[in-house]
Structure formats: C-alpha cells, structure tokens
Image 1 (cartoon, rainbow, N blue to C red):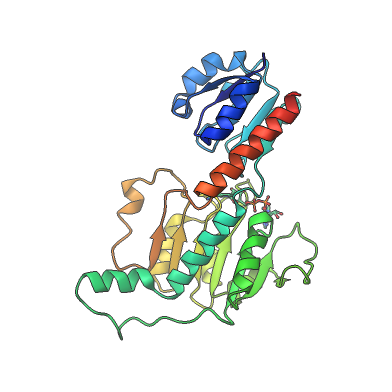
Image 2 (tube, rainbow, N blue to C red):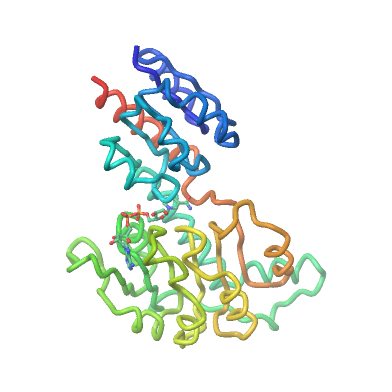
Length: 307
Ligand code: NAD
C-alpha cells in the first residue's frame, strides 16, 4: 500500500478520506523533529507539509521512494524544489486555495491602518479620548501599489478596486492586465513607490526578492504609505521598515510574516503600544474555510497522482 507521511496539521475530514486510500502516518508535531523525519522518510511514497517542515537536502537524500510532496498552502521556499525536479519528485502547492483569506486580511488590515484604528484603540483604552489628536483618512481614490501580481495580488486588486482604490501593479513577469477582468495598471516599482498610499507585497521568497524592500525603497516613497506584507519574511527588511516608520516615511504597517518565526524579543521589543501597526503570526492564509479547501485540494491531487 502507498505510504503517506503528514508532518503538519490537516483538516480532519480530508485526513479521513486519505486514510481510506493510503497507509497514512499523521503527526502534526513531526515538523519540529527533523532528525525523526530523516530517520523515517525512506519508507514513504508521499509527503504532505505546510511551511514549518524544512524539506531540505538532509531529508530528501534519505527519501528513496518519495514521488510526491503536497504543500498545504502556497510558497515553496521551505522545499528544495531544484533537487525535487532533478529526482522527478512532484511538488504540488495548493495554489489559489487560500487567496481569498489573504486578500480579506489585506483589505481589513489596510483599512484599519489608514483609519489609524490601532492608535485610536490604544489612546481610548488609556483614557485619552484622542478624537482630534489623531487624524484618519478615506481610502476612496487613494493608490494601492501591489508588488507581485500573481494569484493573491490579483485577488487583492479585485477586492480593493471595489472599495474605490486605484490599483498599480508591479510584476515583470506579467506582460499585460485584462482590464475587463481587473481594474489595475501595470507600473514600474518607482511609480508604485512615488504614488502609493498603501503598498501590499505578494511575492515568493527567492534570491531575487530577498531584501527587495529596503532602505533605498523606503526613501523613494512619497505619500507616507501603509506597508502590508503577507508574503514572506525577509522580502521586507524589518529594521529598515521600523526605521522608516519612526522617520515618518511610512505611516503604518501590517506584518503577517517575519524573518524569524516565531518573532524574537529583539524584534518585538521594538513594537510599542500606540504605533500604527498590526502584527499577526503568519495566519492571513489560514481560516476555517481555506483550511478545508487547501486540505481537500492536496488530498485530491495526491489521490489522482498515485492512481
Ligand atoms: P503566485 O505565484 O501566484 O504569484 C507570485 C507573483 O510574484 C507572480 O506573478 C510572479 O511573477 C511575481 N514575482 C516573482 N518574482 C518577482 C519579482 N522579482 N518582482 C515582482 N514580481 C515577482 O503566488 P501567490 O499565490 O499570489 O502567493 C504569493 C506569495 O504569498 C507566496 O509565494 C507565499 O509566499 C505567500 N503566501 C502567504 C500566505 C500567508 O498565510 N501569509 C498565504 C498564501 C501565500
């Protein structure tokens, strides 16, 4: 019987379906024990992970029978895809299955930050009643710059244009936008930095995108934008971001992803109550609905693959 190893959490119904067809070993804590994965991986034909399991060379060199890796989510930076390609191991992300969840997060966090909700909340619970000391604005007719115009970037554009935002998109791999489907304009990075009131990042983490938003990028921003990063930590330079906030170059930020996850005191000690920011633990793509969609999608793909 085909053997499948699952090292991170999966939806219960999807797991039951998988159990009917395969010999499944499910241990959602196994992602924390690389040595154990290296020890047992040689027995398995399929592997299902989220983003915590680092499917590196040490694991893959011992994966003698492995033919399929299912990724419960998107972003393949935790998998050595080059090695998999050479060894003919199929790597399957759940593309698009959590795009709505991420887009909703971007819309809600950018709205909250434009409205300075974290600052109003902080002042109000301290008894300051900051009704006139903090100023907020409307989003209508403001510019949203989207960096990385793939599945999620497009979804964010679709949601945000309905709220009256004008969308600029930067993605050198996208040659044109069908404006009948999405109301957005392809732009240079420079135009995005110069015009945007909100900048949302939807890039994969690659050698090209690592540290892509840095001191030099912030210095080109003219409209004190809100920065939203739901893609991967390391794409936005965190120290440069905090510095840009304190220098009033940007007016707020929402981070769902970080260079080090979980974040460490060196980073969170820099975040003070009253700052116009939202920090969340890599959850923008994880909702009840997306978890079901992502899990069902990977279960279907692995079932099709082995049959
Ligand atoms: P996607 O592959 O559909 O889109 C990525 C886009 O980035 C592509 O259009 C690509 O052309 C573009 N791109 C690549 N390199 C670029 C560069 N140097 N400059 C500009 N554009 C570039 O992926 P997606 O489904 O839209 O997801 C985007 C990223 O979001 C994923 O890679 C993943 O890391 C992250 N993600 C995070 C969560 C979360 O819970 N926080 C959930 C889902 C996805």
